[in-house]
Length: 436
Image (cartoon, rainbow, N blue to C red; front, top):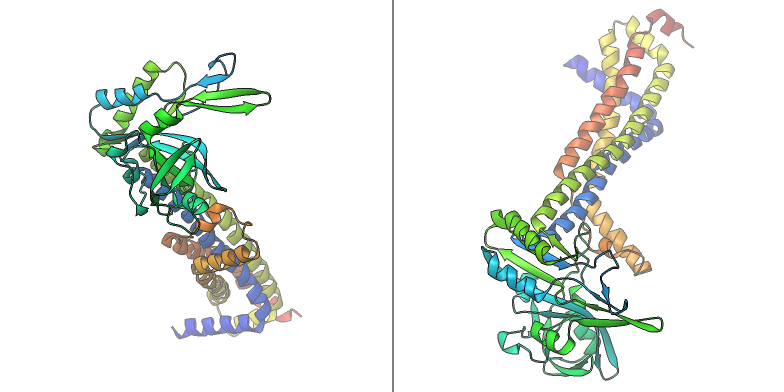
């Protein structure tokens, strides 16, 4: 024990003689260790956000979306109108034929401009039913949501941002606004809700704060299924009855089977692939697999950084062996064994790597506060400089990344410290004493 203590003290003194060299050697390990924690934390933050959005879709839900077909052979009326997507008959068939369904929620969305005096708001006009509020986890800020008695009535619920654009300083409840060429009465306003990102190419991104909600029957009667747009000197249009049908299954274990039945049912009545069936539960499994692969990639990248740091330590230790050749010779002449010499140099290497690794872990644990501080600073300098996902991203430190980074840093220290230590231990004592 006394011999080990003396070896440790001698190793620390040797490092303190060359503070700058020791600091630069530990810097590589510090960067590598903190890089592992930072990269994994960022990856976990992105993955967590994606998983939360998928979970919000509901593990028991099946989402059937209208999709514009790729082919152009389904135009009617001399290439002026395209008819595709989900039909109201599809909604009726799913509701009547398929068992084990708790509820089925249809909706239709159309881009619309809302007006009040000289103020306008470009919005998504959503025709929906009473269940839409709970299904999408919307909350009311004031007024009320759509009810059964509103069937076919000209009433509208405004989303948070839409309401603020039309009524920046007023309470909108009870006021009337122009929806297209007709007056609608505002009966409610929803709270602000975080936008959802596009998930795996299966679902488009959605900003619920720019919506306006009217009864589905009202949209069918007053707005209709046909939407026209001007293309050059001509008009082209699209006819879509429903944009989405969300099917909530009673039991989670029946989701996959029910989705298969829905797909088969739609294939029977659709001549073209103008729909997509999305299962949030499957998206969640895909997100887990993607996260695992992403973490492996990040650890490999950070491991390369640690490898570079280890090579730097080995180079410095080899230079140290050359500079301390005479000292090694004196120690051997005074009775030090090869084991003592190897222990001394390995201790120096382990001190460098463990010191750099521990500092790297401490810096890595500050990932969240530092990231938020940098984000605030950039936002203050240029509010539009960062993409939307960065504003909502929160790094999540994975405990396993701390242990892994420390393990790799210590392993790198031992691996790259053995060769210089053996070089020093196997020197001939007489030649070492003669070294100038």
